[in-house]
Length: 278
Image (cartoon, rainbow, N blue to C red; front, side, top):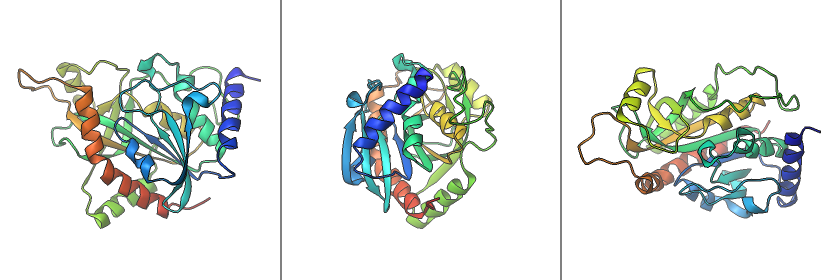
């Protein structure tokens, strides 16, 4: 057996043993400072990553490092309270391992979130941005031998973020009085924040927000034809016209994400209430 498949199978078997017979419909990935959504999951079970065979441990600021299983929006869900990043030194097969595991567990949808810098001059700190497309500057997680058990060698990425889920989110946001933006998310390797010239370049090539995650997970989910919904919380201005004393700060990013998490949680919950069980 491919060693990657063996790792996926062992991890999924362990997590399944902790779910009490639940079969999650929705997988959720919670980014920096956004872990409080996990506190809204009812009848929850926490599964620390450190207990799962073959799993890495999240070292990023604002990432607790647990799977949280339970009920949200009337459906069984499994949420990642913290993710893994390429900048932590993990190879892409470990960065995306949780998505493969959730696929084996039976998820039918993937909801992803992140803290991001607002490259678009119209965006302000605290805005919620629905991701409509992305630009990937990270290594592609599908490089290497294809895992035929999960999907084709050359998966289509014409619509990486599901149009029906995007339309649902816009409709529900209007109903709930939540202002949302919509735009293109760009991911780089990190861990350094980008230079003003890089921010200018990202804006010129069509990015509205920039971060260091999410896209590998989305590509992995789409490899298995899982519909994806993505949202960025704009936590800092990613501009090229800063004041002389401006400085990007990781703690400030987490604090800004935390302040917006309640609105994101409400929107995710309402969406999960409405998604169909296939």
